Amino acid sequence: MKIIYTKHALKDKLPALKRLGWNVSKNNIEETIKNPRWKGVSKHGQETAMSLLDKNHILRVVLRREDDIITVITLHIARRGKYESTL
Image (cartoon, rainbow, N blue to C red; front, side):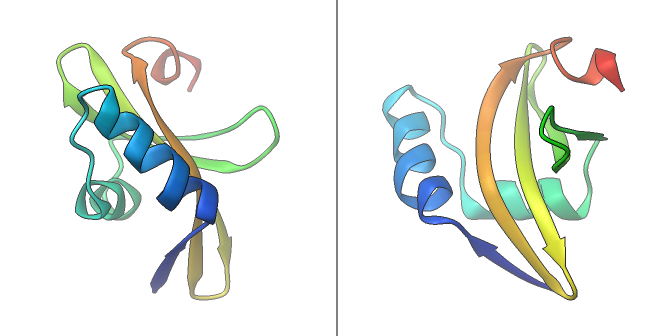
């Protein structure tokens, strides 16, 4: 399985999260994809994988799978309950 990142995820979202004080790494993202605490579907029908960052926040990764390639489309931090309660 190969994991690639869109420009948006790698160049826009990761630096933006860092500026906001969230230290999210590619390792965090890849671990969330491989071993999600929750899985879901975005409002646009895209697969999502989620994991805990702390007791109040989750990391939500929106991705696309094609054959053996996973593309990380975007990611964000959300308060607990916003997404996992809809699963």
